[in-house]
Amino acid sequence: DTEVTQTPKHLVMGMTNKKSLKCEQHMGHRAMYWYKQKAKKPPELMFVYSYEKLSINESVPSRFSPECPNSSLLNLHLHALQPEDSALYLCASSQAVAVSETQYFGPGTRLLVL
Amino acid sequence: EDKVVQSPLSLVVHEGDTVTLNCSYEVTNFRSLLWYKQEKKAPTFLFMLTSSGIEKKSGRLSSILDKKELFSILNITATQTGDSAVYLCAVANAGGTSYGKLTFGQGTILTVHP
Image (cartoon, rainbow over all chains, first blue to last red; front, side):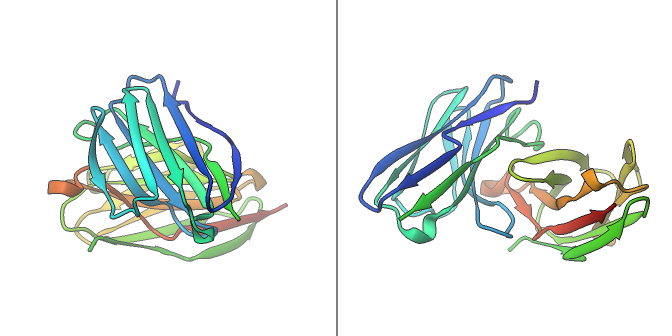
């Protein structure tokens, strides 16, 4: 089973709203990732969690706040977003950063900021 | 800065044709190269390559890595309409704070007509 699930599938929010994206995997993976993908562009790495600790933050604005409550769950809290933040947000997981770099992606959350 | 370049950017073929997709890279600390297929949403994993000259095969798809010339190719034989997708090449970094980070190329859009 190489399934990563993400909720919601679609999200529309205003610039003053607070919302959260959720990601879950039950493969025993200890590394989890958030990517942002704009139309016709490749995924861009935002954050990496390794053993529930934040290991990479690619200079992402503070209006995006990641959280890893346990080894199976990854959240991305959104607050005061801008219209240019509209994109497909992908979650991925791998066995561990130091073990395997084969990342398995979830279906994504398509976010629209009005 | 790590860089991955794919060519061509788009390709239109007919069913039954054979296609070759290219990926060249410049990475400070190369660890591996991965190929993904992305249709509507999540990129799905195809291959991971770490050693030069060893071909990986899965059905009609195959891939090989040349670490001396810093490139990889993805071959698809007897293409089908279901092969229509964006094919992403990504390189995994093995160094320091970028350990485990994937850098993606811009993708090749493959369209297979019946």
